[in-house]
View 1 (cartoon, rainbow, N blue to C red):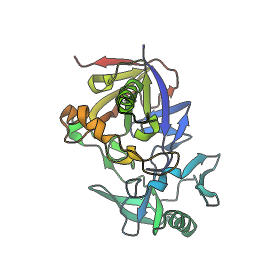
View 2: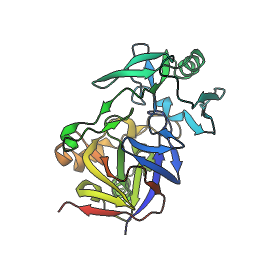
View 3: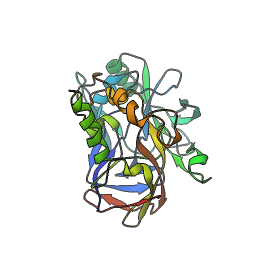
View 4: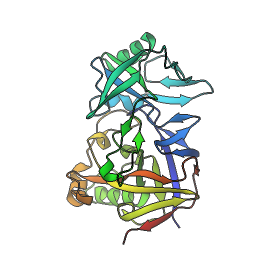
Length: 283
């Protein structure tokens, strides 16, 4: 039976992830130590979101959750401590931010945080936190009409990839004399081992204990998989190879690798590495 082989949590959108041994499942994605996946995001002075697409060095901003703070490290920078206490919604400063076609309010960061990120990335920017009154809705056409929200993810609460799917890609890359890629290039939340390559494409749902997760849309890949997550430098882009066999999968217009998912049962369940999962195929 397949098992859950990796759990990865990204406190700040497009920055380094944290490998977890366990995580709480919520409708909005993974939660760890009462912090949600992609609860924070970097924006420019106009409120537009920033990612590794434009600033590959974001891969080297490494978060670590402590008891009361999130410690951030980046090459050449002194460490930065971000308070994890929720701001007072009555008094905390907010600003309008833009994430793709969505616009909503977010808690604004302070001047020390602005200076730290701006100095590291070489662009005026600020760290913002998702506001509890904001609602980032998942496309209802993919949820069966259910009103499901996420935080600062691109569009869905969870990204699932099978280890066999990456192994298959790596065989194709190595057949061309190219290096194999690690899973972190694709930035999933959930990785399963023991299934066939791309079984996740055809799964009606994945169950683990009392939790049920439904894959609802192939993830259209952008250039981020070309960025080495350990060096922050662009490298060979696997999209040319993926294009030969993953273009238009699931009816999307791009190149799909991995599945965007929603939670359909078991909010509050704890997922653990090594846990057995069942893939219920749709055919």
